[in-house]
Amino acid sequence: MKKSLYSKNKRSKIFGLNRNVFFLGLVSLLTDISSEMIFTLVPLFLANVLGATTTIIGFIGGLSESADTVLRIISGWFSDRIGRRKPLALAGYGISTIAKPFMYLAGSWGAVLAIRFGDRLGKGIRSSSRDALIADSVSDKERGYGFGLHRAMDTIGATLGLLIAAIIIYQVQGGGLELGLETYHWLVLVGTVPAVMALLVLFFFVRERKRKSSETGKGSKESGGLKNRLDARFIMFLVVMAVFTLGNSSDFFVILRAQNLEAPLFQITLMLVLHNAAYAAVAWPFGRLSDRFGRRRIIIFGWAIYAIVYLGFAITSSLWQVWLLFAAYGIYYGIVEGTARAFVADLVPAEKRGTAYGLYHGVIGLTLLPASLIAGWLWEAVNPAAPFYFGAGLAFVAMLGLMALVRE
Image (cartoon, rainbow, N blue to C red; front, side):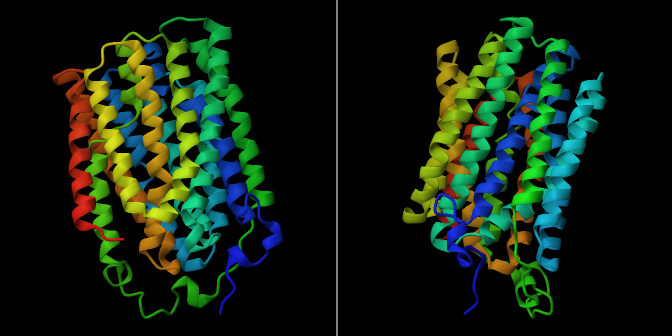
């Protein structure tokens, strides 16, 4: 019996898991500190500083989220072929780190789009390989636990990044309603530092074994195409994810909705802190629950919360309710994000994980562009509540699809 990576050296475990899970979580923590400081407030930078319309903002949000789609698929497949995950992860994190400081120079929405596009290309190269490396590093019985820890650390980073951003905003411009150029420049300068640190942690502390040719798919009889290589349950899961994501537009619109309800910039930043704190608090325990009770029912529960939250954003008129909705939105993310990634690993063999994660991220990325364009159009053509009614409805359809079409 082959000795797997997660059982190779029990003494190297951290929190009861292979050290790779912890250090990849630390990489994501540092990266999210950087990304939240630089990119989370991009919709406000576009609207308040550059004067972009919501249609343009939706286009940038959707295209930037979709930009990495093809690379996620290719890089995941390529990591299966070569039997290596880390080199692709390093390349992806490196490209994103190089792109971020250029936001300091951005003076038009076209420049923002180009820089954000570059950052997302880096994410496209790294994401599938990183997720496959996490899956390679844990047993099937602790898969939800491993992904839950990773998502929790990732989101702790987002929380810290937003707290630092809130401090900078308060120090530079106080409690104003709109984001200023000087404030944003400080966010970019400070936010670049943890991105560099993340790259160093990945390079020096994450290890992977070279898999044998029998594990990479080389020479395998199963290499004749996706239809022969991937379980039908996985394909149906991708279809259901596409339906859900079509109503799950860029989170730019959640931020714009808070400002639409006259939340000051400083409060919006703190709402995002609350959102990420809630995410981090539930990601790890719900990952463990999915190991015990099954991924599908946990995902359905999370989508139900999402539908309620989106209905809330549609009908709310009070600022205190927006605070609650941001917290509940974080709970949805914490329940679903890690569980869904663990579910992908459940549905495919180990040698196809890179390809599977590429397709999973790819389907989400491809669907986010039309989702954000639809949301931007609904916002302007109907009213700011319309995108949220639309998202809640498709979440309900996706819940029915997951229950009816995908078996565990």
